Length: 138
Image 1 (cartoon, rainbow, N blue to C red):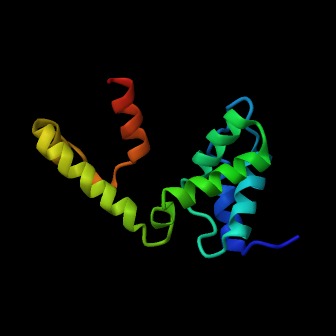
Image 2 (cartoon, one colour; image 1 turned 180 degrees about the vertical axis):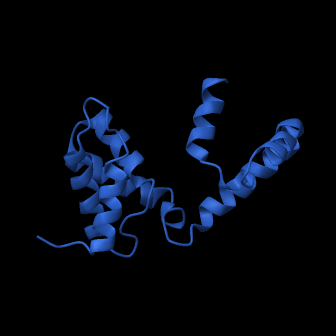
Image 3 (tube, rainbow, N blue to C red; image 1 turned 90 degrees about the vertical axis):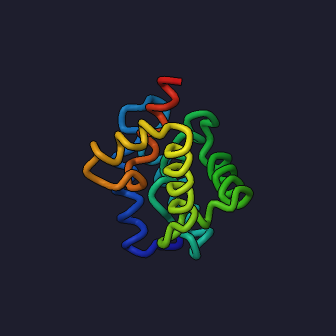
């Protein structure tokens, strides 16, 4: 069995312990196997925070580790997510910029509210929580 670098294995463990904790059908061991395998198969990218959610949702619906891994690999390749999941995060930064600009154009009052009310610059907000919030109220 191939070993992961300690830093990669530690990052996976941290994220596993804070995702899908109370979700029936997704166990920590399932996520660990999927993410460790991906990190071994693609050492150039290895693991980046956020992959755990994709892997977890895939496993939740597919209930098969090998299939979940294969779909995760294909999704990352097909949608060129390696530019999203790397240490410089260029696609994430670009998407935050796009989101900020869209909100400023389409919802200027909300954008002004964010600028005044939030302690951090808008693009540093947790986008997952923001998207879920927008989805729930849509």
